[in-house]
Image (cartoon, rainbow over all chains, first blue to last red; front, side, top):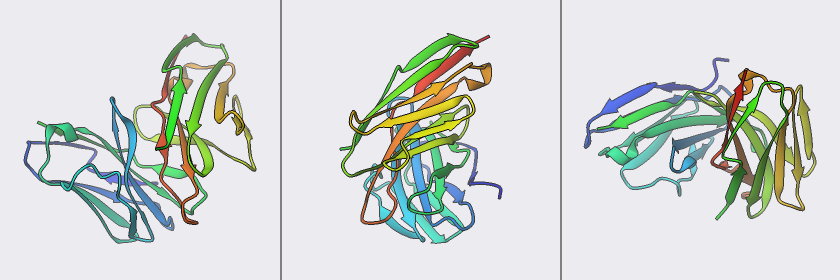
Length: 113
Length: 114
C-alpha cells in the first residue's frame, strides 16, 4: 500500500480564499484523523471519522473549518475563508481499528498570506 | 483536559551516546501511550505501550511505561546521526468502545553530532 496520501503538499493562498486539503487513507482502515501542527501548539487533533462518520469535531477551531468523508477512500478539510493564522502543516492519519497505531500522511504545508 | 509533557525540549549529544527521553501524562481513562519519530515529514510510529504491554524494544530503541508514575521513557543506545529527529509522545483514552484521537506532547528535538 502507498500509505496515506495527501494533496497538495504545499499550498500558498491569499487571505479570504477557500482552501481544500485532500486525503486518501490506507485501504481497509476504519478511522481517519485530521491534525494540525504549528510551532506554538504542536500537533493538535481537529476531527476524526469512523467508517466515514464524523465522531468528534471538538478540535475544529472555528466554523470556517469543515471536513467531509464522502466514502472510505477520500476525505477533505476545507477552510473558508482562510486567515494568516491558519498557516500550519495539516496531517491526515488513518488507523485500521480502535486499538492500533495511526499512520500519517506527508502533510500539507499551508501558508496564508 | 488531557495533558502530555515531554522533556527535555531539545537535546544535543555525540554519536555513540545513549539518550533517555521523558514523557509524563495526565489523561482520563488512559488506554495507551505511543512514541513517534518525526524527521522532516510525517510522524512515523515507533512503539505503543498499554497496561498489557509496558515494555517494548526494537533494535537500539526501547521504551517503558510506568503507570504508577504516569510516565514513559524512550531510550536510544549507540546513537547515530540518523536518529536526529523530533520524538513525539502521545496518549489515547478509552472512548465509548471505539478509537480516540491522539493527544501529543510538544516533542523532544534530538540532534546527534558526528
